[in-house]
Image (cartoon, rainbow, N blue to C red):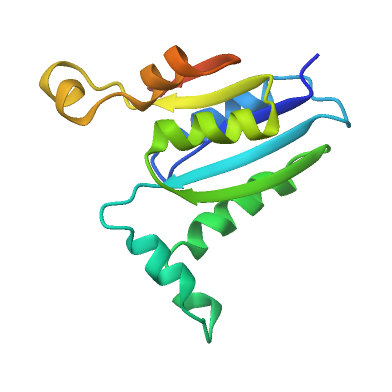
Length: 143
């Protein structure tokens, strides 16, 4: 039985397929789904922006991500949480999975090949090789 599922999404078209994959599972009311998004850091811009006081909610640059994740939450009939963190995507996904003691990670694959895969790396490949739980890698399927 899956008690805790970490769903790692970004703002790419692949996120739709990750959410569809989650919908294929028969979730129990006691299942806890953690919707996570990792903001890749270059020079920790996220920390600088997040640490400043905000007058209006529209000033927070990742508010659209939070709204997107809340929309996914609203579709579920079980417990769910949102985690928006900054850092290396693969490392943060694995860290969150360990914190929540996830039974399953659902993550998308951009389908990079060749030089792009070498230069940019594959987050899903790193998560598969380093996670302490099962990982479901979802690929974007052309209609």
